Length: 250
Image (tube, rainbow, N blue to C red; front, side):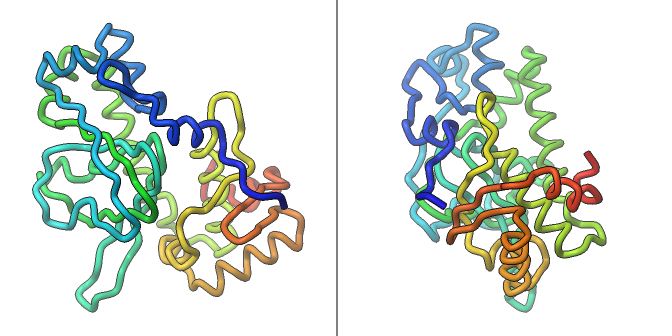
């Protein structure tokens, strides 16, 4: 497998193409706001703060469990891991957030973050004041629908792998979903980089790290994927979808 080439979506994020007037091209709220004629300066006039923050370095926390919630953040670049730690000090990975995705939605009900968020590499974020976004959403049905959609997706990510699935089913589903999340409208992402370590992937899938490595090796032997360190290419998505069907249900 040749060296990793980022998808067009990842390249746009790395370009950091937002400015004082325009949203970044991967901003999850840009299309909704633009349809109503709201650029970033207009939102500022309405006291809706849109603030670029970072970079957060690898291993640096973005927020911790129990911190007061006042904003949601869109990932502009890098990968964010969310996790909790049980009473015995054992870490449980809850999810991974890629460029164009939003962290902090699960803090809305309690007004405090119920988990920790940590940068897995260099992370750039775009912060949105949630109280002001909520006020704006009341007059913008499209923005309100987008917030509801994001909340629904967040719940879906948390429950998708909660069933009684086999290790192969979980791993295949994870690869298919990562491919979908890296894809851009004009390019299916059959090649992507797993920016998270395999120990974190195993923790998220509730598998042993050795099991994840063994399954990836077998998938490669069977011609389903090609793996080179953290670079992955899906060679047979049809068969992967068949394996993952009980998890994805579509």
